[in-house]
Length: 593
Image 1 (cartoon, rainbow, N blue to C red):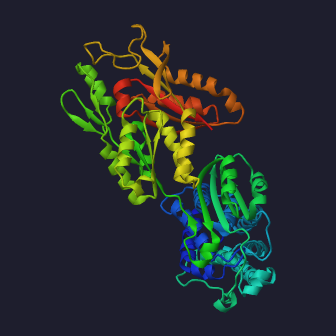
Image 2: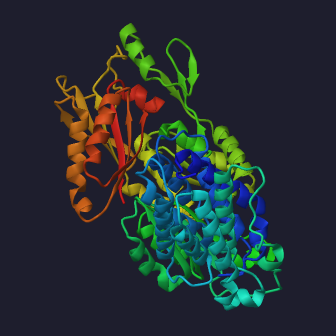
Image 3: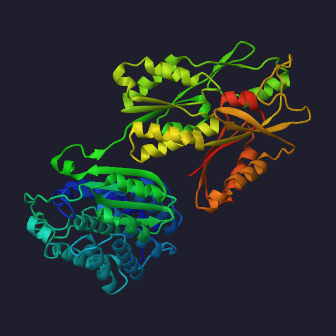
């Protein structure tokens, strides 16, 4: 075999997970460096699983496509020193071959060399006697091989990698005392063996004879004092800091600091005695996609070691969340009941199209929004408490509905012990503005913050959220000419009105003479946030519309030109907003961060 292409590389990635997953306990048992927490095999398997999930059910037309998916899976799933180092290896390995249609021996050796360099650079203080030695030895073996046969080159590389692994106790005293080789190095050697198995396409697995159980080492009773007992692993989005900058900001807080950045996502690993200070510093450098805090002292003794924040959300339907967010975060949404003039009661219906039909049919009176019964909140709290330790309920403005009052009454229906676990927040907003507060809550949950702390922070954030809405002046469904909305007294020639949420109420700001809502809202937000954006702040926004997707998409495109905007999602307006503001409404909730 002279070359390998993306199909062979894909198999190598998938089968390496299966091998390490099968033998991870062999790796765990000899894990004494940098701390004897016996999880190196599990961490490496978790990282490889993330890669497998990201590539196994996809078809790739190039190595570039494969590498993009593999790196994304590794970065998302990477755990522990070993997982971060392996991700760093891939971050150096794949770019070297990404633009190739096939890889020969020379290119493969260069890719492994670049992988070693990137893995080494991901570590704050790289040492000899670790996984890095095995990676480097294999790269040198492949580069030194003669001829074009990749399988032969792999044999030579494995021979050198195996020797490097067996030599690790001579380079690290901690390994020598324990009578073991480096656990991460063993894990990487297993990956290399699997790579070769895939290339040889034989059923009998290849095993290096010198790598037997006796030479791997029998783990002695070995206790190491943990000066930094907590392991923090975080994945950061939209981080603008370099790997070097991240290391400089965290280095004083612990050891075993590994940082790997791919695109705008950064994976961080550190052992520390100050996990929450680490978390808060990481938060300043970007948005936390996920964060894990583990007490390694508990892990060694077999106790529950991973700190878990278990918080469920309850919201009313006025939030206008999309289905993906609701499903992913298991959010309990209390639907609104709509009573139509013809006597039909609908729950959870997208009413925009129906309102348009009602307009054409000349319906005399608008549908009625039924108040939410406190028992619905009570039942939702119980469901969430069956799954989560605590519950945060975020409802639409108390000045516009009875939802907050009903949520509080529903909480009082719980027993005293359950009641203490439920926090009710008045968003003082609706729809896209309420969604922004919910997104802030989800981010705080991902940061491993406790429910009480989150509730306090959310109450402080409420006043910072803005909601603009453009609606059509219309009294078409009320023949008696009664007020149907907050702008109904506008002059007859005015068709559209800009509203803003202030202190929990919608306030008319100005009349519009244009029907290009997207350009108008963009101009207003750009003006309002210009100074803050220049100072480096970002905008998080949610857009909703009354069956006006063209203007919603245009507003999103306009905002993207600012380059410091995150559009979380676009969705149709909730039933209440649809009834009052349809059919041409456009709303945006946003916050400067």
